[in-house]
Image (cartoon, rainbow, N blue to C red; front, side, top):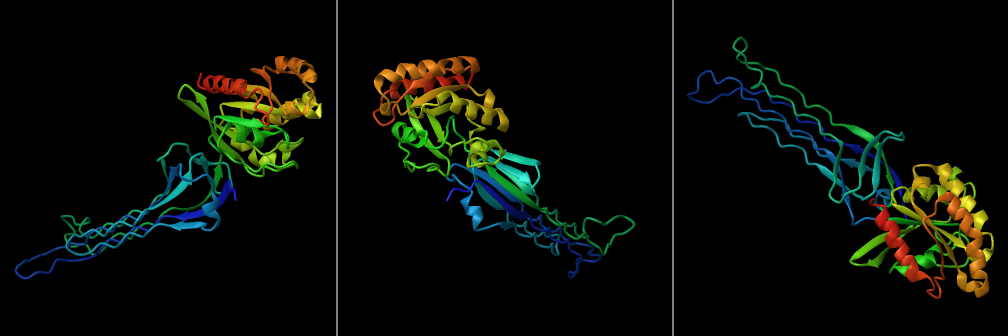
Length: 335
């Protein structure tokens, strides 16, 4: 199961109490105070890892508690600190406080650490409070409570290029043809229910990650269909491929609908460099290929598409040109 949102609770440990103690030893007159400090409470940390691809683990465990610090003791001994808790999250996870929009951190690099709940400070023992006028203080500080909060996790896949199109446009078939990924492929709408990733070899020792996003329909930016839940996964991409089913014969209308949904969703999607790829050319007569491309070209010129290309994932026609196009879009994403 693919899970890309989760709400959990985290609680840091309480600091240990300071100790009230006086030194009483044979042959040691006026021993005085010797109470040690309490240990600091453990903190809760998030660590980004590339060994996870979903937030599925948080479906079964929704609360994390760090250890409490131990109290101080006599002979000026400080108590041990509480044990920290390190929670692994997939790269690309956004961490929000509660159910609001206060962003605590964006976990994008492997090994990146984020403290989401700081442990409480340990209390000071009576040794610390001695003065010339009060040489035997009989009080100490209690340990402070650690932070406790609700956090919301939102996963945005880290992909270089996103495949965007209507249901059954051939995105999963294309991903399987270009990469080693094996997404579910069938001839009914919304076969793809979760985003799929694949790594494509672009040659010259370069590769990029393709993201197959569940199909977009009209009104997806308002929550219709599956697209609204998964549009966030193309927010981090450097470029988009608008994949259109050329066999249906309404390419321009489909492009207008996709462009409208990307504009309505916002979050810089409409500003990304993109190319238009017409799929399923094997289902059309060869003499119609040029006609369809000519009909779509004015729309591409008007909206600034990088290139227009016709392919067939089933026969492999046009895929070498598509690889060169992906390399161009991938390289442009760094400029």
